[in-house]
Length: 343
Ligand code: KG4
Image (tube, rainbow, N blue to C red; front, top):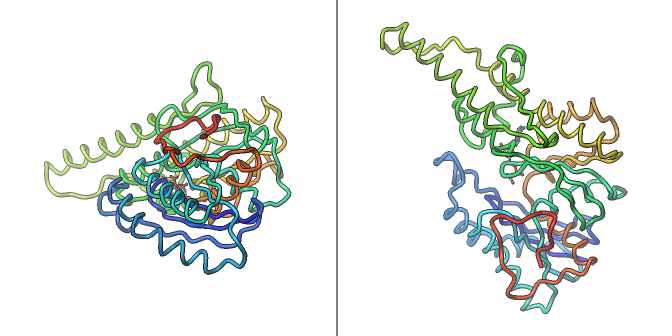
């Protein structure tokens, strides 16, 4: 069964076709980062308009690479920027209606987990999944392909958001996760102390707002001391070792993720653990999990970890098998519980 899928929840327009949830036939991804970099973050209206311009040509390109018929259409319906989601979902509705095909709404977070099913054809639930991206940090039990139980998540910023905000404070531009981890290379990760938050009664929940505040205060105080020393002059050196600062900040985020995920795996007795989402591109995070979990951790390749429609097609296949069929009145949602069905 070939599923054509659309992903437009944030700032990547993506169209893909996947066979039987596992075999990637084509995947087109157009990133809008260049459009948003000027503003230091994603501008929702620009994202929606850019999806509108990109989606038809990308669909034509994706379909031209596929030999064989399309059997169903899937689209991300939640969570994400609402205007951006509506572009992909409505385009999918139009295509499904014109071709008389079933339409399957897909939860973006479930899609991230399904990226692992494309990467590893033998991988199956039950498993414990962590989705760590710019917009989400969630730990979930995947009991079967469409039965999810949330066991933990962030109380404030997502892990990728913490990387991006830290990068911004360090003057690294947007999106800054990869740039911050490059700056951290060679730095001393013990040099600056950052807290790892523990939340009473919620052992698998994370919080990243504290580390961000510590970083902001360190930079602020260093600048104040510099300015006082130079009598308000224009001395630029703050005395901070930026590489070690980035390394220490990164360590705090990674330690929290590794500790909580491993604790959840032990407490809930999971042999198979999946890491997905854009932050899975972080080499230190992957190494930390591999050293604790060995062969039990499964991490899709980087091209399947960032936002893409292939993962939506893969999850769409399993939602279809479970009976999901969207009406043409299907809505999109900025937030939606990953444990609940979308239609
Ligand atoms: O999954 P994704 O492509 O989009 C969202 O759904 O958010 O994730 C993007 C996030 C951004 O916050 C980006 O800074 C972060 O993933 N990221 C990284 C790295 N590469 C991307 N964070 C830490 N280290 C990296 N190497």
